[in-house]
Length: 377
Ligand SMILES: Cc1cc2nc3c(=O)[nH]c(=O)nc-3n(C[C@H](O)[C@H](O)[C@H](O)COP(=O)(O)OP(=O)(O)OC[C@H]3O[C@@H](n4cnc5c(N)ncnc54)[C@H](O)[C@@H]3O)c2cc1C
Image 1 (cartoon, rainbow, N blue to C red):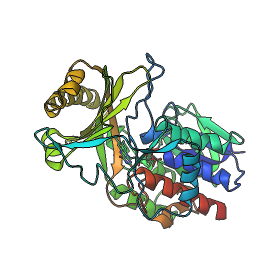
Image 2: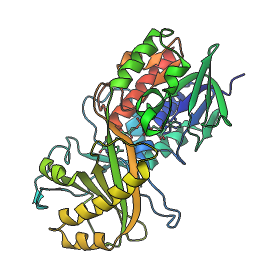
Image 3: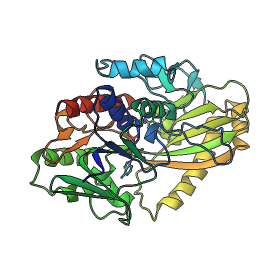
Image 4: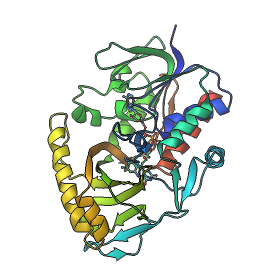
């Protein structure tokens, strides 16, 4: 007997939206959600602090925009979140600076059409809401479980962690992140194989072969996000974007500021990657190097904003978060390959083709599309 009818790996926006949507449409099967992190949100998560329990810092996506067309299936999900007050339009100030640190006009990335939307009170609230609405019946949540091994035998999936002390079995499987299907895991995690490829060797399922070869070509941005606790009271812009020249000079995309309950301000510096290879051995040194680099360039880029510059000089660093694949850049997975029937494996996430590819909207769109497919299967 299996543990679940469906296992969903990943509690980011797409994994949570998929479960919500399946339940909304009356899908009653047993679902197990497996997540490597301590809670939901994935790249739209909010970091908590052990020493400051009220802190919530959106250290990945600080918000997102919705571009047209928005699918008819996604609208009700968005409306539900708006009505519950967890998805709100973000009217906070957004500014841009040039390569001399001078304020300049906002470009389209700083001020996208339709404006910014964000989770309320924080980005993690979106996934928390979706799971809450999905209900707890026949839903098992497995936090802090990083799946390393996949096995598909006699029509049954078995998942296990690194040392195979934990296992879970199901009839069907959905990968929301693409870590288990993409060769980037080889160097970054020192893995010897791509787990999904090993589970279903080439030549058995032609749809999966095609999906895996498409996924392998998809590249993604690495980000080094420095997080800081600023003793800075009063209004600040929510985001400070850098122009193309400023990005080139400082290798930073934007600064994101977030007021906290204790009156302090959380700051996230979105640092760009210089292309060097990241391995478990090289990562600790790279994290330390990025922390030093980002603090130095922060001081330079804020010279026209002395109050903020001073607060950053005196700030408490909360460390650097390395996002191994912050946003997919190219080669989206074709929508017809989101579900591979013979292996009973599916994909959802921002790496799937469609409106909002590479962004939060794309993650949600892919989830509602896959839910329809699973319901009609
Ligand atoms: C720094 C940054 C800035 C961004 N800015 C924006 C923005 O301005 N606008 C915008 O629209 N989007 C932005 N994004 C992108 C946005 O966050 C993503 O598109 C969206 O959150 C993706 O959701 P997802 O469900 O597809 O993937 P994820 O959120 O990555 O969810 C996948 C989940 O699967 C889990 N997982 C993966 N492998 C395993 C495993 N083997 N075992 C167990 N769990 C596993 C991961 O821990 C993760 O929680 C940004 C992202 C980052 C990192």
